[in-house]
Image (spheres, chains in turn purple, red):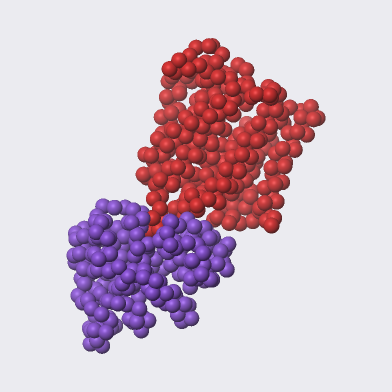
Length: 227
Length: 324
């Protein structure tokens, strides 16, 4: 397994948010992390990246225990995070955003520009002046520039116009086809399920269901994901 | 493509060169000395601008590096003069380039040391801890009688630079001017480099930087050390300008002055420190001629800058900063 998350627990101060999450991503696999709002999806991702280090349980990346490793070390080991809410560096240009993150590997500035031609067009523009969709592309491009072994996308298409969403999903499908391992959080099942090889559902800070998208029946969807 | 900022920068650089040359030609060396002061303060503040402007590290202790550079010049010169060996049998020197290297090395190393500890904190704690370190150096200098203690240390004859008569004010000014331009060149290089992008990114958001695999601490420490070395070089020049070093170069007033220069000129802007230093020295000269309490008016101007012209002089002349 590339990523192996076993029984992690995490809290924000005194309030515990995760009570045992199990999750695995194999090499080349795309896993969807699902659940209603507040069930612990983002907390799980923060725990994996040690932004909010787990109190119990273990996170392993290609066999390496991530316990106690600072976030930048986790990123260097190969986790590329696209955080929730289009987190670019607003006062750097598109080019600087990408280059600052670069680490040697298959992904280069040229390849990112091919994946997202919009970024090439706007390379000298300040990131804060980009549209929401472009900022999201930049955040994904920036994560790719670190040449990650696992790409984590947290709500990558939230609040974007349908055309832009399609562009981003197309890029994600392309990345998957190239064999990149992906952990993805998204609310739109119709777009998420065709991409995912496997789904993991969280409820109240626990992983409660795992299986292929085909096994995610309408009943299960209603039980765990419906509003 | 010439942006408005580039034009303003060229004009400022040309003015700083033209005014003292004209003053020299018309036989008024006093203005040359004033311009030299501007160039040196601008160099010191450019050093601070690397840490403060690009890295967002509000160091309230850069006087330590300024003073260390000054003392490096003073101590090396005094040993060269007296012929006493300095350390490990090494003698002092009167050669400016060697003095500069020593000043930058020592200031850079002290910067590394201070940075190693203080960069573990942030915000107001960082301000206070850098101030505390600078005060330690200040009291150390005061209580060290070998080099004048509170009275300071005189440099009897200005140090030498091969092929240049440094006692001529305009020659010494040109040396300082060239060093300032080199420092500004380095600032451009750093700002445009990957390292510079990462430094500015770390200022904007530490967590985001960590998630792309950059350790903000190391980037900041490197920037802090480079910044300290540059301010140290300015200190060495300042000592040679006044031919005198005293603990006042190390005092927290000096640290504050450097921050004021940057704010007056424009934080994080390439020519902000130069614009700020020029304004500061002109105020000091004009207002200081009118009233002893000129710093009261400087305070008012600073207040107005912070309230109404946050981009400083460059913000007014060249428009909003690219890096806000």
